[in-house]
Image (cartoon, rainbow, N blue to C red):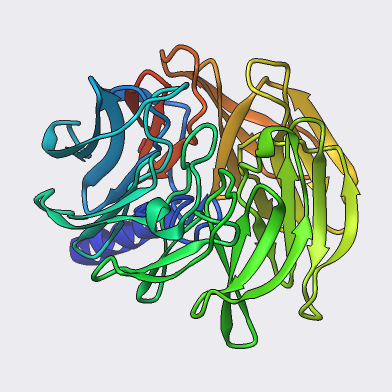
Length: 392
């Protein structure tokens, strides 16, 4: 009887708790949503804190290791940390310009034993994820013939089969992920979002939010498929496009707004457009027919807002200031730029705040939080990375 009781209890716990790694930018499905369950902010506590140096890299988490990056004394540094203790396992550094708003923008991503990092100067590095040793390096921006963006390359790498996509050029650049050789490249003005992959009729289409607007390209060949003009001040299209079935949602700040585009016919057509979500660079979340996002600019009053994906109508809104968000287990995890963490029910009926936690971080927190294996990771622009235990 004791044996069967133990098995039953183990089964119940397994049903309630599900841990999930976060190995790439925007999570396992690259949509900002974790499959993790069983976490709670009600008994949250800071597990550890480390200093990474200036920058805006988020974290990737895989097999008990945390990967991120920062800038110290003229060098960008990619770190591998122990997820349990925050202790450094290895670091790899390279010279990189600083410009305004110092430090790397991209997030290191991990697949198998390889880590891929994109510098603000447009160099792409492949490192051994276990040792930090360099496997290959490619000057992707130089190879494309494009100029750097005003605030530096911000695209994280995105894996597409044996290719590595980066938002460099007017409709992206692709490298062989094993060798770093350029598979195809485009020349022109990129913006700050990362690529997104849309599967359509057996083909992979790359979505690149560039200075001119949304550009679609065949992932295998780099051939342009279609485009949609979407110009903003300073050429800032920083929030990732979001695929919803055969539709694509885009949003930008500087008073521009958001739009839903239909790609069912193979040609982009506007379904609706409004100014309810003007996201400067915080990517949105789609759940069960509704879009959740930050409307507003940095250092200004901003709102967390829920709108209908069908027609763009507003469901609710609350002023929390500028921030960024992810989702897990039907809840939103929102980090505002002052370092406050919110847990909000992802439902269209009303704003329902379930919990709030003060991370101790000070402005500016512009980097998206990450939930992985019972821990929420948050950082600020000076490079303080806080691991918040939400496993209980």
